[in-house]
Length: 483
Figure 1: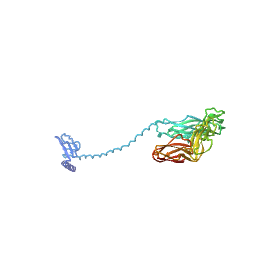
Figure 2 (figure 1 turned 90 degrees about the vertical axis):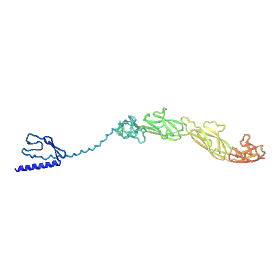
Figure 3 (figure 1 turned 180 degrees about the vertical axis):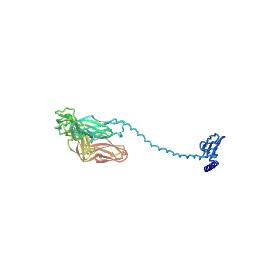
């Protein structure tokens, strides 16, 4: 009984609760002609109820249950609205930076390097100067050209290669090298560039051949500028091909070359010494294994000289002198030497000219000199090769005199009067009239060595002066009066 009461109380409570929920709008019923078919919750969630009717209500499917004989249905608590699970936003993945693709290196053409010769031969103790050349560089920038990384030898006891200490190659990327031959053998020399390129050369080193003696045909030579001396170098225990160089310490003085003429001595090498300019230099011949020969050569430019070293004269005098030229040495080939010119240090005091009658000699020339003004002067003679000689001329002062005949002139306008002037020394002279509007002077006849004749034309009334001046500065005047 107690259980029945409790069930009824619970049922009533559920009904009250259901009514309140309906009133509050929490629960809504859908109806049709037969039976309520669902419950709509306030949040629009519907509970479907499907009735099964077969007379007496025993059970109702889904959540509502009716017990036979119990009018109050047991309404189960509504299924709670499921709380939506919050969706955790998927984080946007941080983009992984893309590593740029490594560019494919440009396919640059590789250079090619090689020795000037693929193989070399030498005697022990000799040195060879040669070059290593770079090719296939058309598309390579000069700034990208590799340099030499190392020099090596397969056997340093036999031969070595190194950069030449004094010479520099003049081609792009090239290098001048020095091969030192040390001992008999066949080493391989290698020059390696920084890009890995290698130049190789084989060297055949032979034992050195002793040189007993080598010398020029003379310890010294003398020649005239422009001449050539053909001589020889004497050798012992040495073949001609072993001489590898002929040099001159001063090629402006002389040079030495192998002669095309066959030397007259056995075992000799013919050479030509070319005499180029004045001075002295040493000539050097060198053999492949270090033997040397040296000889000095002195080149002159011939000579020129006066027949006298000093001359004396008086103002107004004229004299002649002779100048000669010739060779200092007897050269193998003839070099003509002749007088080319003679000059005066002051032509106003000492003038020169070639006389009408020339002395006939091959190596001499005569000149005429006029002593014009007192003083000391220098004559300089030169030959065609540049040799010079000097002589001194002392000119003494003469007794100066000028006389007019007549000593004065008086004339009427329109008249002409002649005057004769005698003078000493016998030098060039000039005359002037201070006022040419009053009188005019004109030379009449030929001027003699010591006199001059003038015609004076009287033009208008007045007084003027005729001045006569010698080259040495001495002068006198003549008065002219026109009435």
